[in-house]
Length: 268
Ligand SMILES: Nc1ncnc2c1ncn2[C@@H]1O[C@H](COP(=O)(O)OP(=O)(O)OP(=O)(O)O)[C@@H](O)[C@H]1O
Ligand SMILES: [Mg+2]
Image (cartoon, rainbow, N blue to C red; front, side):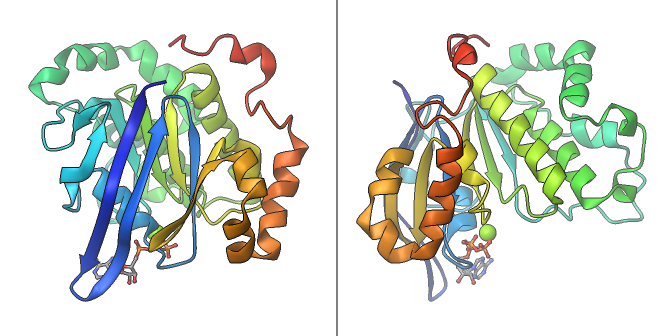
């Protein structure tokens, strides 16, 4: 299986503050990886380093290519943790916000032509249940509605890798479940590889196939079965580990996608 992300010995400091320390891991195609860990554990920093937003990029490969040479940014969708990106006075519509996600690099033209298709945009709006919001002003939406719009923006170029930083933080319980179900659908049916940082240790067990536990250093890297058996995870998370495991057990342990849909994997 192809490595979509390869990270080797990543470290990052903000002046004297060590945010991540010597972190290495790989993410394979089709994985749904949950990045968990305490506040200030370095999750957002790690995601930004992977995306080249913060420099320590020499030791990262995306889609088998060193990040310093990587040009296929249309293949990567990103939703950042802090999404207060527009002034409330800015009269920008939902539709316009989504279209801002289009990657305009020269080598991405073929992909852009595809995304120009009105059908795809309509499909996206329908999938995220935001069709009725299309012409509304972005800043007048609720936090949860804004989150869906920004996910649509991240999906506009039909990415193969989706990197999401605490996307559930603004959502109520019902919206959170439906948001995670959308991610599951994208992962299972469109074969999009997902890397998602979260504090939602209750729900994430249902969805994640793999876990990274980060507290500056990587405490754990492995699949859900290894996660359940891991002594370091137990030592680190204590009783919270059981919450995650309880939710993993609600589903068929080996299949986070319904079995009939697994056969369709690979079809885009
Ligand atoms: N722009 C910045 N300037 C200086 N220090 C920063 C900056 N961003 C993060 N840090 C520090 O780096 C460390 C890791 O922060 P980071 O935001 O990556 O953690 P996190 O795991 O995402 O936390 P949370 O769960 O609260 O989102 C923290 O000690 C934080 O104070
Ligand atoms: Mg963060």
